[in-house]
Image 1 (cartoon, rainbow, N blue to C red):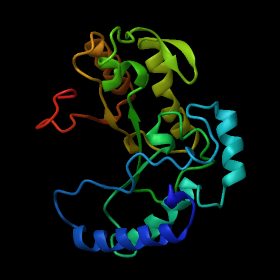
Image 2 (cartoon, rainbow, N blue to C red):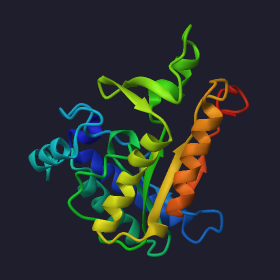
Image 3 (cartoon, rainbow, N blue to C red):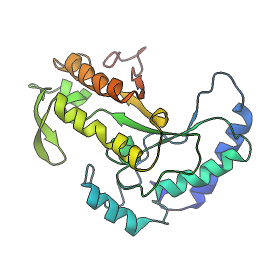
Length: 226
């Protein structure tokens, strides 16, 4: 969390990315620079995960300009990258671990036109995750599962409504569809509802014509998401 407590670490990050972009610019294997994976400046800053859009916006107004200001962090790092590389796209994850609802508090898009806006999709995490696979009676998908402090029904409709949030934000703020990315999504393959979950997520992403990447993590040592 020190990155979100003291802007000296922003400056360190900007220097790092300037050096990295200098080394990598023009390389044919580089699709984009993903500045930070799953940032969570909100976590220790008093904002509940999956809070309402109104609560998120109020929180951001309180912290705008501080070290917890994620869009401002991106602006500083992108400026450093663009000093040496004007072409390579830059990918910015939303807050709260790249949650699909966490662009809701951003008052505007970033000025750089070669930015990709990324979210990750594991919600409802209580149903898709490794801890659930270890439960004697795993939480089902589709079904009622713990989410945001309550029991909620998650199914194809809820998945579609949740994943619509970043695309709605993008439309309001003039972000092109080709700039939207679901950089990770998946579920533990041994869970009974995994196949249906993946179908439901992919159906929505195809409808939005979004870029996406399935997550197969550490497939050489753990096959849970292989």
